[in-house]
Length: 165
Image (cartoon, rainbow, N blue to C red; front, side, top):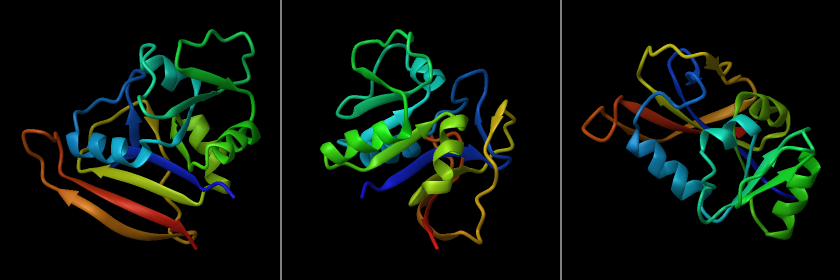
């Protein structure tokens, strides 16, 4: 069975994006994201793909979950039309399925996710896309990394690993 892992960063109010972009510079989170997703199958929606300006994440299988069969795919991205197709590809590659956004994709996978990896940024920055709080009745919470704001990180942060109860 393929492990389904959602990974994202958010501010204290749940902001994950502003105007289609990630509105912060957080080196520790990007390093954690890169190390965690490298060599894995990543699933994203069309808007997340477009925010990458045609540049797939290197060292990963980049899947775009969409209902648009006519969507033009830049080199390095693969269109999939169902969550089942993503799971089949991950199973063939003996990979976890790393869900990297956006919000509609997270919402589709949340009911069947095995793990959540959330970076909480100690910021009140307001955005236009927000995640709902993690339901602590369904998940066990463990802090795996934390650090202060510094020259590489705009905000103090905490990376939390949630495992389904």
